[in-house]
Amino acid sequence: MTLRRSLTALAFALSACGGSATPAPAPSFGGIVAGASFAPVDAAGFLMAPMACDRLGAGTHTMVLLQFSTASGTCALAQDQAFCGERAAAVSASVAIERENVNGGTVPAIGPGTYGSAGTGMVNADGIVQFFWASVDRNDGTCTALPGGPKEGGTGTLVLEEVGPSRLRGSASIVFDDGSELSGPFDVAVCAASSASQCASLKSGCSAVTCVP
Image (cartoon, rainbow, N blue to C red; front, side, top):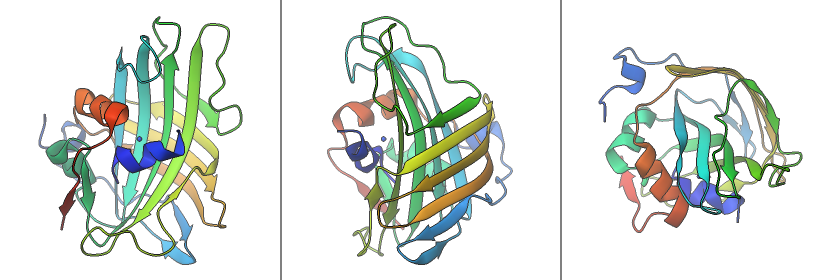
């Protein structure tokens, strides 16, 4: 799942995830996508510390991103391909909270709490704008999108009970326009991927996307 695809819904180094060589347990989060069961076997969390990303203005930007996949190596894919890679023959889902200060000031880090699609994109009195988004990609062996996907712009909620530095823990419930649904708890390792690469993908997308078997 690339941030390039996920960001359409808004207009989305170490060799081991979370500093541990132990694979994360399969997440309980899953559901139905395009009429078929979605049961991810791997997941990774990504934390962008507040930084100057300049997507909506001169202020700082931060994000909490969760990615779930039916293929292994979610963390390594983001690290190796700078958020510009896709896994072949896989179904991948992303859920995220983005926050930015459009007035040019600092933005508070995203901590534990309940976040949802209601009110997404609205600027508060301090210039803080927050986005909730979710998306699903379904790829064949050449990373070509399968019929019925990708899906973007789901509505729902994301509950964050623990936010870093090593884990993201909570639950989510998302519904897409076609009736696809994702829900359930998660407890995933935070991946030590580059925030600068994440920011670059957010701002301008990917000039090329690498299809990884």
